[in-house]
Length: 122
Ligand SMILES: [Mg+2]
Image (cartoon, rainbow, N blue to C red; front, side, top):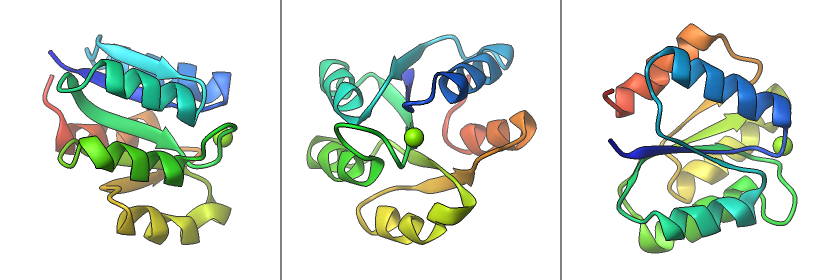
């Protein structure tokens, strides 16, 4: 099974997302602590990623720039943005650059999984 790549600079969010995925039998997870880390991991695992789950605000490379960089070599893998209520306007920008959807933090695990399952089958 392909990987789900999570990029968020918050340890708490990364572990909530990871635990939620694992509880729902998604075991192949790659974690990145910022946009640059995510880009490197995406390049190293090209063709083996089923879904990206990306924070918007991250150090070194923000989520919008990351979407642009990912779309240079991966035009098809779905990208879900993790955002906050105050970042909503950035979602349209992210979509223009190739993001597929988004979820607003804080989110319920069940709602998060519904979105994940729209794109990935375990
Ligand atoms: Mg952040």
